[in-house]
Length: 211
Image (cartoon, rainbow, N blue to C red; front, side):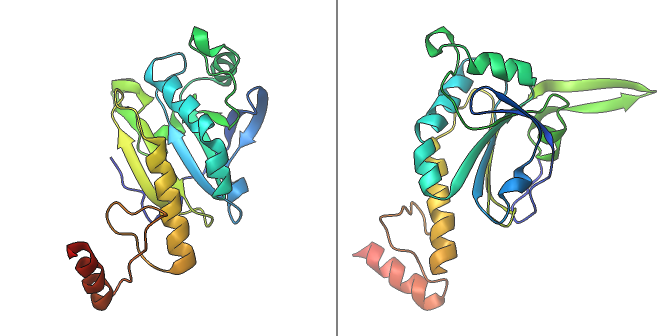
């Protein structure tokens, strides 16, 4: 599993479904560089069990991300047609109708490979291509700043759903650091003070924790 922290987010231009129904060719995260932070997350498959709970949970908090100058983009290895069908299936029938943020179709699996979240590996032996593992994306999440650099990543195994609240907290931490220049200690949230990255700053902070 590769670490992408501090590196430029791998680029791509692929098909996506946006606003719940519109097909877009050549969708890219490059459109947000210089403008918005991006929470870019992978999920294994459409029409499954944990996945709709995550996508709906992100939709439920979409306004909170937008208030923090951040867009949400999802991606899986399904086709754009599968995405469209899922987006137009009622929630009481296993669908995610009402989800508005873009869902990228990584049908070739190249985006998942470049982000290090494909749950298996291709190999070539005597000209024969084989795959070992599960040819879907793990539950990877990447926070990309306005310069297009990855500042946070977390990757869960397939059965383990993510916390949308934690994704929001990391957006808050990134924005706080960029505005104030302070760092964010353990369990920091936007109701707490930051920490000066100096010996004096850490001593003062630890002193307040002891009181």
